[in-house]
Image (tube, rainbow, N blue to C red; front, side):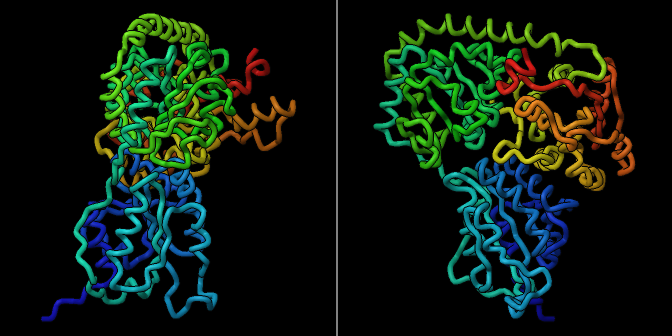
Length: 568
């Protein structure tokens, strides 16, 4: 009997397996590709909506260090991939999207759900191509994955005509055997002369500081960063997206710096140290609006050194000594170079810096204790975060939605492990990605405790994925902070206009009941004494669980925007 001729879909699957892709997020389409994947043990996690599927692939990539894969139908389904792809483009996360195209004879005839996908994805991808030659499968997949995982990582898309997928494969013209699905694919090191100059600047500075962004985590450079901090005795802060890059129990750790510097914040206590900085080493940060508090937090007369894989980010706002390269390898080179310098000035300054930071952390605990120790009902989110803190382990992954949820995580939790993962969608900061990212993270690291913190506003964007969690048995613990309002919208409008729109208030929703209707164990709590037992039960269950916490609508993070208005 003659063996069946492999299809183009089969050829794509062979390439995916070569790149070590063993899981993807989809919803059956493109059917020929999905069937071929499942026949070859590449697992499909079937999302309920493409927006969620893209967020799952994003988190999967962040946790595994491998490219995240998502698939979708042409037309309206494809349009729903745009937001999570935009997040990945801004955050530097590799994702490959396979999108079905109409059959080739039907192009430009107004076929069902035909759309100009090339134009659709132009602004949110690093690479987008239509595969129309069966012999070029390996070529285009390798080009796409190389684009996604090299330089500044990001999303890519391949458009797959439905009839091409079903058709016979053709032999590839050139041998392709490399596995490219990990990231960073390449690890270039900054020029030695620039590294030496940076080492000299840091060694001679009176008050240098380090600002670590999400690029440190993307590069897996946390250990290299901690080695530099210790060797050079330089205090270090992180951006929101850099949370986890620095061990915050280290005596030179200053926590998160950015727009969270209101009266009850850690950043308010550590700001004097940043104010007197004469040399600022920026690592893997876009120096964006939130991370710099509207570009206000760094001294105007400081000298900047900027290490980044993206040449366009270096000096975007702050002219800097350019260290163009991979964060991990360049930090290793910088540490080696700085150890050759006279570090007596840095070592002499270290005890006073450590004492100042120790006092800052202690003063922060006192300042926030009015909320973190509160027994009031409705509950304060700070108290919820204090209870979560006691349950964190080095393996715990904490995921947050955009808006206030991510602010509670980065501003209230203390990281005790270099490289710990606090996933916050701050590249584009779209609301609703918290739970889907939590699902992607839990799929990425089986057995690790994964907690997703979401507000009731963002949760409603994607609560259909409760069914995904149950059906796929993904052990994510979702905590819904239900304050009945769009918190940031209400507070920001109040500060800016003295009033807020009617959209800020919600009808009362029993989110625990919604979860139970989807087949998930869930509970609703409104008492301080119930928080820890509920968390412990959920984490111990090894099952998808939801905890709805009734929280105060008056609670808000300590943003600089509210200082002097909502926060007196």
